[in-house]
Length: 251
Image 1: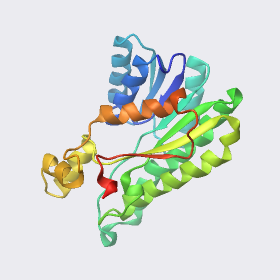
Image 2: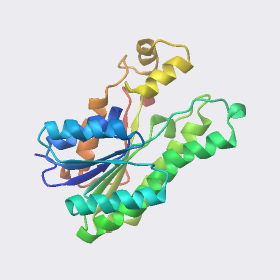
Image 3: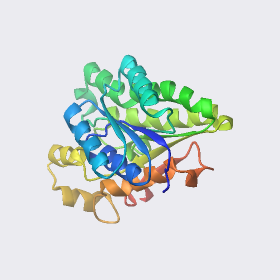
């Protein structure tokens, strides 16, 4: 198995890409610490992992809180001894014109999308350094690479994650810690449901419009990429941005 004996923290694991990744990791032998602000949903993810024969610890987690991050890391190490993989997946999506975006909107989204990634790396990487190995995967977006109307807030947050990933990758490159980012396009999650409703477009039509492949992606396609970056198969990769968007950015 590709993650045999490894311990992974996955944020935003109650639904969508995070949940798919938790189940995929468990099938590949990882012990998973699954966190989410929605306690009921993340407990369900943990239950599904256990039904697969895996080991899981579910924790309610406000990813923008440093105290919560300290608690999560402490509980993970207490339960499983170490941390080998961190998938900073939790995030929210807001589509708003520049002039309608408030400072409150800005601060809330930056706290969840950017501060959370900073805090996760700040508190997990010290554990990884004790064993001189670890893989961090940060969820950015194609919105962090290219521009779109009404995406000033979301795009700024994902652009910050993109660059922060490279900075931390360079800081720890000689110490066995790899840090990479993934950049999904339109994936079949609640975020795409929101985008379709906000733009008054059918989800399937939206996928056909934005992706040369002609559809939205699915969560398992993304979790397969996260698995590769978490595994030793990507041992020569750090500071890399991996786009998974059906060809949208190639345009």
